[in-house]
Amino acid sequence: MYPRQISKDDVLKKYLYLAAVTLVLMLWLLPLGAVILTSVRPASDAAVGNYWGWPSGFDLVKNYTEVFTQTPMGRYFFNSLVITIPSVIGVLVLSTLTGYVLSRYRFRGNTLLFAIFIGGNFLPFQIMMIPVRDLTISLGIYNSYLALIIFHVAFQTGFATLFMRNFIASLPDELFEAARSEGASPLQTLIHVVIPLVRPALAALAILAFTFIWNDYFWAVVLTPSDAVKPVTAGLDNLKGQYVANWSLISAATIAIAIPPVVMFFLMQRHFIRGLTMGAVKG
Amino acid sequence: MTIWRRNRSWLWPAFFIAPGIILFGIVIVGSSVQSLWISFFQWDGFDEMQWIGLGNYIEMLDDPQFYISLRNNIIWLAVFMLAPPLGLFFALLINQQIRGMRIVKSLFFMPLVMSQVAVGVVFTWFYDPSSGLLALFFEAMGATAPALLSDPRWVTLAVVFAALWPQVSFCVILFMAGLNNLDESQIEAARVDNARGWKMLWYVILPQLRQVNFIAIAVTVIGALRSFDMISVMTSGGPFGSSNVLAYQMYSQSIQAYRFGYGAAIASVLFAIMVVFISWYLWRMLRMEKEGA
Image 1 (cartoon, each protein chain N blue to C red):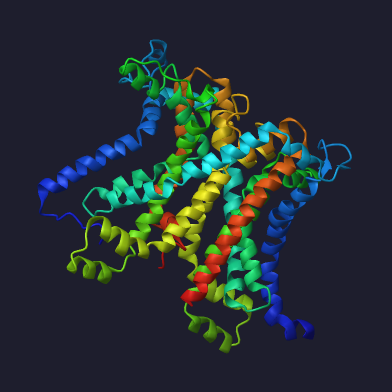
Image 2 (cartoon, chains in turn brown, yellow; image 1 turned 180 degrees about the vertical axis):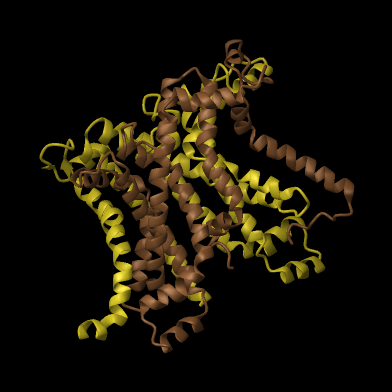
């Protein structure tokens, strides 16, 4: 292991290390901590200028309830779910198919197609704004869930194809040879060989795609201007404009929209990290 | 029916890959190319498009705002290059397997999981000159807090530093994975040879982290060129366009000023910068794959 591991028996060193790391961590998360603290602060604190001291009381329930009763945040949450979940499913389906074909079939243009999927995904997606906006207008889906779903599925398929192609390429060749010698069609191979084996990869991909899509702000602003379909990220930006001085409300809303991806991250941390570092390390 | 049977070995794969190619081809590749095309027109988004050739590009050369945005993009890139070394530093710091470190590591990654909008709100408040935490520090030292986000000299740096927060987290994750995949025998051999400190890091560890380093730099460049969310949330490009970047200028020219042709021309510049980088990336990646195979 590098760096050299601190011995379990060296108790003093161990606790000094833990104390130092905790201090660094607290500084690292200081801005976030302050927002969490503010989100449970009674409004009266702000009135007397107590922004950073200990709260004079804890209004956790009150502030968070207010976010969902006084503002359209509940609506935004619902919208985010309606946009994110179908998008993630779409990405998983399409990328399993493209990844399977690109990894297991040799044909002219295979590498080129693969390069386009990766390259397209690396573009600063803002450059696609004008044509994508036009496309949704001419399809009559501008300012609807479908506009965002279609874009997210298309864009994430690039990254997801890279991911699934590499994963399926790393599966043992014998399985595919055996399927072929049994006379299995590509469809049968897909159903009986590929899909059962890619489940762990799909889990990693699902959480990554969920986080990326949930956190998207740019396309939400461009494609869904109206409150009825807008997701949480664009919604928070609205609230920030409307409730300028009400920091406890804004803070509570900020924490609330961060909760779904954070919970997903804690539940599936291993998958998340494996997905994100894929390509950086082998295995 | 016989045609199907004779060709099904390649028809199936063609069916499988078709939806992905069509969707990605139209929405991502098609739009990127079409954006270049639109940049040769004058267009308000509603009426007939009017061909003006290089008109938008010529205008751009005389547009002071364009140079400010370009300069800010370069500042973003330069400051973001701190993320890989800082990421490595934190990864080295927390890569210990003591009880309790697992939760510390997860908490370190938190800024990455949050949306950039949330990070933007968090830092808007952090910088707030009347009630922010930064103001508190200044007051404690008996000074008046600067209004970073409304000062043209500081605003871009203030936003970039906020954006650096999740980017460093990203790099920590990458380097942690790299450190846990090192070749133990090389480290042991180096230790037997009494390598330590900087020398150990420089000659033994870093060469093994080449691949991770490459990816950390790649995601950091992409992150810097995609910067939009934080600017939109924290400053809207202001004050007086001083924190604009190309992506945001393109957005405001198109959506707010209805100058879609000019917006597309700005997008093309961003595209050109990125194509150089992507070509380098793909070339290196495919070469590494060949070497590995």
